[in-house]
Length: 244
Image (cartoon, rainbow, N blue to C red):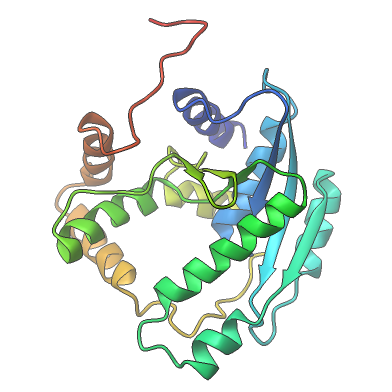
């Protein structure tokens, strides 16, 4: 955790994600990334100089077999308030509409439900679990399938909800998220989504893994390119207390 927290604190400082008095909701899907983010943000809140509070919110999409009670137990252990929001996203996307490419619609509906729930809970910010590898994959997806150089931003303000999205795990490689979740025996959900492993993102992930065999430094180079360009919204903010 200390190693991960060092990454998280540096990312939070580089992009000035947290201000004193912030109320941050962590979106907890039940995957290793969101659960590790929950633990990291709960840990950061105990010593970060800008005081902020943390709570956890899960969007119950209606997948058969989803059990949120282990996450509730983890939140109790961490001392973090927890809310589960029931929705019918699974029914709409996979049964009623039977979308051929459901990922975009599903993600939009899930994000909307999360932002509304966070605002209703009195939070002004939402922390998501996107890590370094997610950013690299998103860069390549944008380049390969949209013909542009783009990536989600470390900090994004959503006008219609008044919520600011944070991605404090961007300096953490996925392998470290996976190792932490396994070491701490976090209650990771089984794979419930029928599209798991068949998306364009899965194809890009496999491509990167193959290219790493010849160039092990590839992830660091690609992530560095995002920051050096920098991609829109990736300009690091100078530390007000230490402008150098």
